[in-house]
Length: 216
Image (cartoon, rainbow, N blue to C red; front, side, top):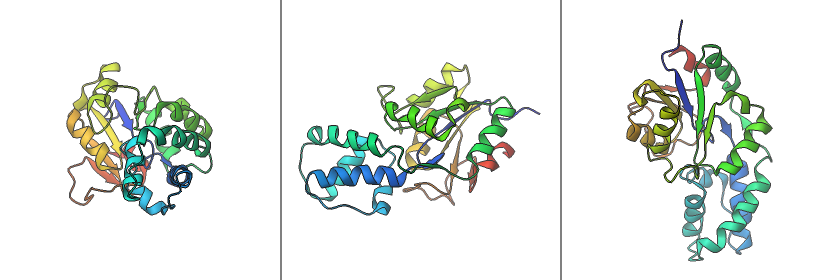
């Protein structure tokens, strides 16, 4: 039996990978560089999803700092790279879900706002790089999520209509990108779903475990 969606596009952080502690540590090291107080990981979670520059901007705004972001970002990127592989882990169910989808000949891709240079090392470290036929980072194209441009780009690359592909994410950024692209979306209850009411959102499915995906 063939799978309903020939192409499934995943978000990365908060959907496939729990990387919050590492992102928070990179951000806190950056704040310390500028003599600003560290912030709790729970707070950092609310800032993840819109790309690294927006993440840093929100942290420095919350600290009431008017330091020029262009001066801050090089240091943050050094910390981000240094912390990338500290303690990331795949969420429960990710590998079985990817294996099940691949067994049904579903094409798998990643669309993340993480800088592209950070994605390949992370996927390799976690041993899942071979599952994905295409990976787009937040700087791969002129626009990133919540624009639908990256999702349309991936769908076009595989000759699949956006209405026939599925976006899987955890945040309002993923949801808005899917809506903008005219692509069905499934959401996970874990991750960093700030800004979304998962009980009322217009989604194909809201799942607690990605192993539910092949049964949609």
